[in-house]
Length: 201
Image 1 (tube, helix red, strand yellow):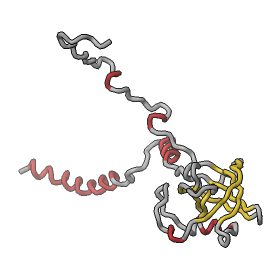
Image 2 (cartoon, rainbow, N blue to C red):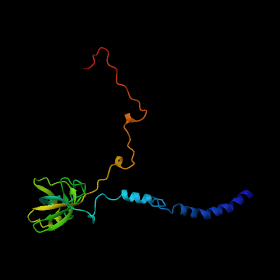
Image 3 (cartoon, rainbow, N blue to C red):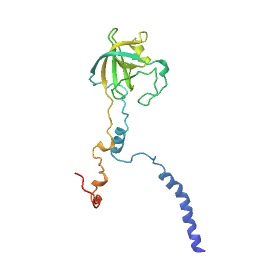
Image 4 (cartoon, rainbow, N blue to C red):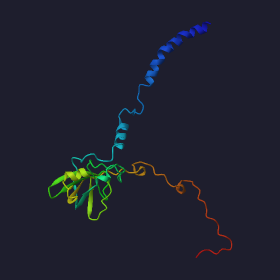
């Protein structure tokens, strides 16, 4: 009985301390990097940065792409999926180009009125001979080619979308050899020639 009575004060103390211990355990939010210098946070933020540029860089040097005929999307394409996976939005300043990487920013100039618009490439095309770019309706309105439907334009590449390397190309990433190249991997011998069968010349 004396031993059981001696444990009661300890139980009372534990009941008082337990909530405080639980509060301390769950006070740190999960998912946050616990590095003192913030190196993990910086590295993760750099990796998670979007590949598509939102606006031209201030020090970007435009690269002329030449002249060609431009047209614009029909309204029936609004909401359809583009080659990049985005839904086409006729109100956005986007365009289709045969080869430029998705996310590239292109300045389109109408030499007849010197009106310009910067569009982001998010689709492939045009597939009509002699045309070099398909603009959204909003972009076509900016350079005033809606009435004619097409016009001669000048193209300049302002910023090309960066290409993110695959995992084996990342610096320091190990490249796993194929099975026959593994050290100590047994090499299965070829089958012996059949008896009586002459060797191939």
